[in-house]
Image (cartoon, rainbow, N blue to C red):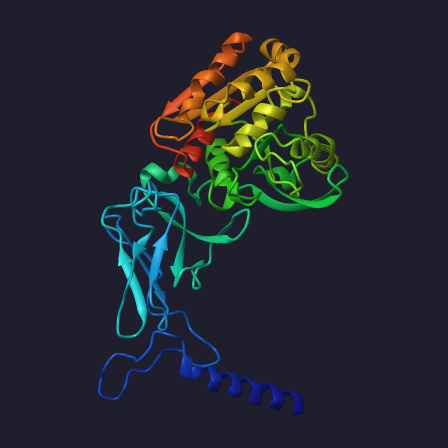
Length: 403
């Protein structure tokens, strides 16, 4: 009985503490609350939505910051709706306005297309993920919040409750090449956990500003694969998403990073093949990447036909800034491998947006493919260097694999 009385007293105490915070009471005169900030030890969800999609697909953002002097909302994914300060002279983010309770808000002037997006608040010059958010995306350094606008044109990358779903695991491994602990995300397809079948593997690399978390948290690669597999458009596969950056050291070249190549080939691939049920022939391995990950793929995927017979390069090319020396050095280092790739590759897929700042690398890169007789599929889309394109490139690339 004493223990029951203690439990009863504890519940009563918790209830008393929580009761004042369940809702912020309005003043007796009926005026609005003095502050949007939560009151009490135990806080209920706020009465406002921090991200609200309106019926016309405009989006309203809100954040409670009573003491802030300036607040903006920023997003690098939808620069045509939320400016990112480029070209110089353009505003950075959308300026928000504060009401009498300290709640800041702004609504986009135009609709936001159905898709998944990163965003953050800039509070008195400091970047801040949504403090009331529940979905986040890790960058190389720092974190963004995410939001999704639902709609038919974005359904290919959205969670569908009607289809079977795979599992995304976070793994750690020791890289003897780098002398460091490393992390990767691994997607296993629906049915993997209950079966004993082995699967082909796609090694899918992110861009320079991102992390191994990015292809799922903002890229929705797992939902894209779930939906394609359910529709019979893609073969069930394992997708390994490595961390594309390596420990900083003098002389490191982010786009020609031999440290990454060594870790991938000597450490990550053996670790995956020892721990997952994988098919371990070149015909059952693919490598693809966006931006910096595309550079990694050009250097360590396309030039390793003994490992990969399926290659995807998204929004990256050789000859950045008209650098002909880069092309000559690449050819000199990999001529024999490129000739082998011409004979052995099952697929080379290359995709670029016409508004991408790297669009000028398309012609010299395709020129290398043609010079060595490497057949390739070229997907020239609209748009620029954004996740809006990269999700769609993956959705076009994945059905072509392991056929």
